[in-house]
Image: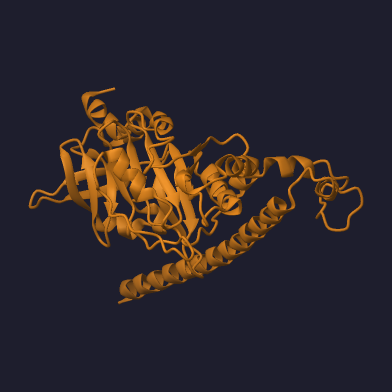
Length: 361
């Protein structure tokens, strides 16, 4: 690994990105990592420090959709502009992992929450926000991202039944590490140090008011993020963080802060669903009929497991809900792809007609 890779290793650079950067090695390109995304510009960490950057017109034109453009956490290929202090982004290097969701609302479009993440902290507080079903949804997306999920139960000092809540989460997330922490009481925090090793990126995901900003301030050793109090009536907080940002920690590692999510709609996370509910799918494979819908078919292993309490009814209900949501998004994606392809051919036909008219004239 050359000196550039060594210099960027604190930002997560390694052999994977080095190999994909090879085609740009001979030219005067540099590698950088996206740390902030604005409307039309980005902030990047590069070998010579932090700087502003924007994508080239060609890159914007060639992008088929939003996922082809840089996202926070991406490694990009940049070249400084001679006339200014801003760099131009020419390409996005292939992602090792990507946490994605469907954009909020009715639009059928993928949004990349963060790229090249090693560990995802799924944070829920031990107050009224505590919800194992929401954690199952987050796990479905986390497993599909390629990163390793870790569940953080924050505000442990506000809960009198911590062990019971840990057990409930462990039932919903078998095999996933679970840590109960309290920043105000400084408990459980030493266990988190193992995830912030040199060059490792940890993303913090959770609802508004669960303590993401408080945890970041603790990791940095000073108040970097503004902290707001949650509302007493429902334990909800306003969004302290308003945009995604990659933060380099003094003790090593990076943390990707994200705004609190009011909703996390699934996007093409079939593999994550299998992983998050693998014990349910294992039982389903024992059904007498391979296409069993688990409704009124005879010798249905799922219905038997529900009746015997082997499968938790609430967990199975959530599994069905997420499965239906994925099927709906998949159908919408197919329709959207057909419309996009039709528009593309119309555009190509129109351009061909224009060129033909120019030739004739």
